[in-house]
Length: 425
Image 1 (cartoon, rainbow, N blue to C red):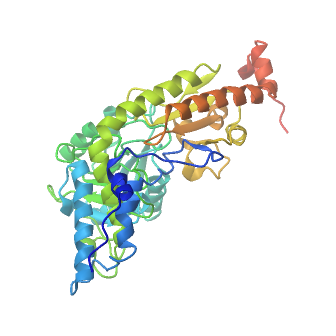
Image 2 (cartoon, rainbow, N blue to C red; image 1 turned 30 degrees about the vertical axis):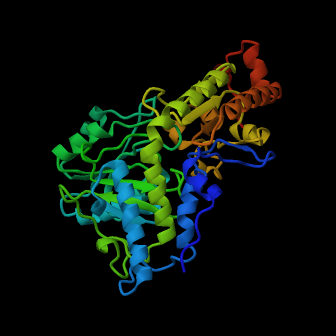
Image 3 (tube, rainbow, N blue to C red; image 1 turned 180 degrees about the horizontal axis):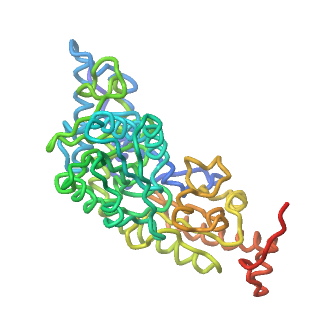
C-alpha cells in the first residue's frame, strides 16, 4: 500500500516560519536554558518512528531494522555536520549527564596509569562537578579553578594548575546559568601541546555558538538534544579519532556504539536530535541576530530598574542568556510574584535548593545578590511582545516587593547597610 500523500497543511509545517503557541493563560516561557520547546518540524520527523517504522536499528535481518539503522546513521551525520566532525566520532547517549559521566570516568580510568590529576572549573554543571567528586572518592586528585568576576577563566590560570600527572581538563563551552563563553580554542591548544585530554561540555552551545572540531582541539565534547529544540532523553558524546582518544565504557551489554555505550538505540529520539541539529546548522546565523536584539531590549528595560546587576561577561556570552540580580529582593519571592513568566532563580537543575547559586558565589557575588538573581533565557519562539511584557511585569513586581523591604527603605534613606552589625539569634 502506498503511503498517503501529505496534505497542504502538513507540507507547510516543514516550509513555513515556525511559531510556538501557548494558551493565553500560560506563563510566557523564558527558561530556554532549562529546556527548549520541541520544534514542530522535529516532532514531525520523529512520529513515523513511533508508529510504522518501529524497528530496532540493531536488527540486521529485515527491513524494519535496516530502515531504523539508516535513520540513526543519517541523524549521526546531521549531528556531526553541525560541529564539523566525522560521523564515526559521534556516540549516542541518553543526554548530557551521561555523556559527561562517560567522558570523564571513561578517560580518567583509561589514562590513570599516566596520572590521576583532573582540572575543572567551579562553575561547571553539576553533572561534571559531581562526576569529578566521585572520581576523587576513587583516588583521583582534582583542582577546581576559580573564575574571574566575569565568569571566565584565563589560560594563565589553567597553565599554573597543570601538573606532570594531569590527565584530563574539563571546561564547558557555554555556562548554563550565566551564558558566558569560555576560551576553548586556547584551552584546546594548551592541552594538546601537553598531551592532556580536553573534555568540553557543549550542551548549552549547539545552535548558539559556531563549533568546528576540525579546527578546535577538543578530545571529548558533550551534546544534548533538548537544549536545541529536540527531544529529552537523548544526547551524544564526540570522541576524537585523530589523534585517537581512548575511553573506558561505563555501560556494558551488547557492544553497541562501537563498544562504548551498550543499549538499544531509541530511533525516534535520535531522529529528533538529528533533525534539531540539522535545523540549527541551517538557521543559527539568522537566529542569532534576532535573539541578540531581543536580549538587548530585555537588558535595556531591566537596567532601568534601580540596583539591578547583570551577572557574567556581556561580550563573551551567548545572546540567549541574561542573568540579573535585583538587589533588596529575594529571588524566590520574585519568581512567585511573576507567575506570568516562566523563569528560574539560579540553576534550574538545583532550583529545589535554598542555597545561593554556586555559580554566582564563585563569581564573588554576595549571598544576597546571588539569592536575588533571576535567569532569563530566550530563544526561537520568543517575541518582542514577550520581552516588553516581561520588562513591564518585572518593573511592577520588583517595585512592590521592595516597598515591603525594610532594607530597601534603609538603602533609600542613605544607610550603609554593609556597615550594620546584626544581632545573632
